[in-house]
Image 1 (tube, rainbow, N blue to C red):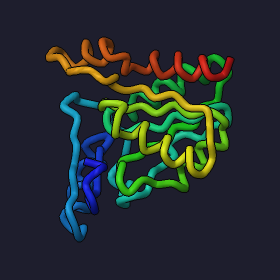
Image 2: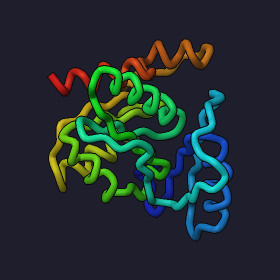
Image 3: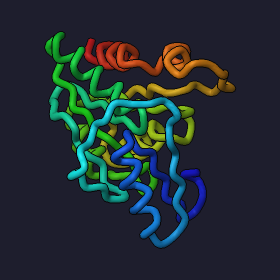
Image 4: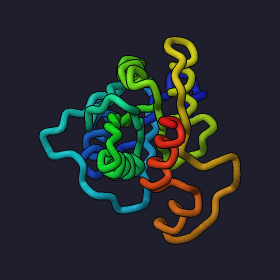
Length: 182
């Protein structure tokens, strides 16, 4: 969907953000694609959260690495940051709910950490990882890894089993961060 001209692409992290994204999409001039995960997720945002198309949100400050996530992977990113903190690694966590237009400013802020892991429940081709890599390649080359579905056909199954099958867990994010910090 990112390749379609003038398309806005939104992938909310929880039910609060989903409601706010639907309202924003209804008011937006132009086509909007809303992508929702099927897996029930913990609530991340409260009702006071302000949603703005094209603006990401730093959920946790950090300096050693940044985890940029979208959709249901935002919860996994927050869990990964907690695990990393116990190991002495302070990871920034960024929620990118809008993949197009992408928030370049927040990506460049995350790049100041020196290493970025993107996390998405989507093919790594054409999704969040690609969008972040495009920004970094042109504006601030930074070491990065992409957590997402590799170039393969999907399977059916229980959501938690599929997250493990495709290496989309907090532990997989932790592993990617630690590999870059060696």
